[in-house]
Length: 180
Image 1 (cartoon, rainbow, N blue to C red):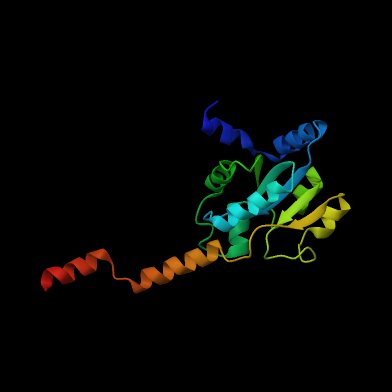
Image 2: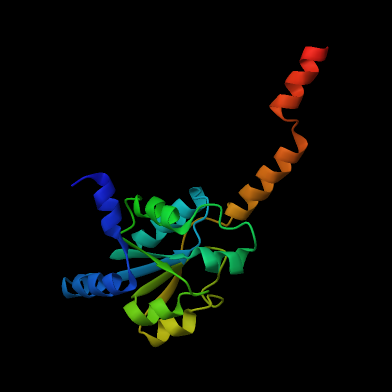
C-alpha cells in the first residue's frame, strides 16, 4: 500500500471513526484521544502526540476545523487548512486515526468514542481540562503529557511577523547596494 493511501486511511469521518474504534475495542485495544488545532506542526506537537501514544492503545487525534480555529485563535488562523493539517498529523507514526471536528471542544467526540484516556498537553492540569467531567462520565481518565509548553504556533507566527517587519526586503536592500 502506498504511504499516501496509508495516511488517507487514517483520516476518518465521525461515522468511520466510530466504526474503527468499535473494531479496535473488539480486538481488545484501549483508546487514547488527543486534540488540538495543530496549525504549523512543531516539536511541541510531536512530543505531545508521542506522550499520548506512550499511554498505550490506539491514538485518535481530533483536529479543530478551520472555522473553529478562527473562533478560538482569531482572524488569520489557521495558517494551514484543515485537510492539510489532518494529512500532516496522520503521517506521524504514533497516530492511528485523525478526525476533523467543527465544535470548539471535543466533548461530543468524547461522548461518541468514549476514550479510555484523554491526553492533554502541559498547558493544562488534570483539573483544568475543559472536557474532564465528560471524560470521567464516559468512564475515562485525563492524563497530561508532553514537554513543558515552550512551543506554540502562535509564538512562531508572532516571531515571523516581528522579524519580517524588522528585516528590509531583499529587493530594497539590493537597490541600496546598486546605488552605493
